[in-house]
Image (cartoon, rainbow, N blue to C red; front, side):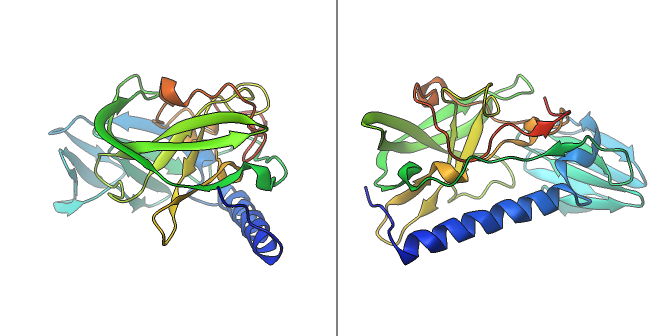
Length: 246
């Protein structure tokens, strides 16, 4: 497991700080999780007229005003309509002019001890991941990533979501740890980065909260039992400060 040092660590830390500042700025913007005001479930084959648009849910996307579309945001005057598929289509209504919760994101200090560059132990299988909307989401288990924190061995399952709009080559780790529901939100996610040599960067400093930490109008994957870590991962995003979230 590689450890960055010197200038490389400085660059990694600076990149993490930049990403955190950009997220905090985005959270104040017109597409923020905090401006979601409603959610409309739209089963496949059904059509909804909403804020001047006619939207039909398809098995592999949407039809918006007669044109095929993938998951995206649609301008609708004062509102934005976020088309969310996840094999259980829905429309999340965003209203940047509506009052929003006073919520501030927070992070643990960057700690290089929680950054790992490790091989993927390939073990592909079709799996189902639970969700906060009480319906499973289809995924492929790509394999396992092993690491060690404070002389305690850990292992997490890396998955790829199988749903419209999901990048076919992007792997994710959904996990809980001993800080979950206390110092951090009840679950956190990591998007894995592939190295040129085929290994993956598993950086818990990049762990982030799902949209559900900021709004009840989203559908978020729930970490599988295999990714319930007994160790305390004091790295990445903490629980948001302030009211709101779910």
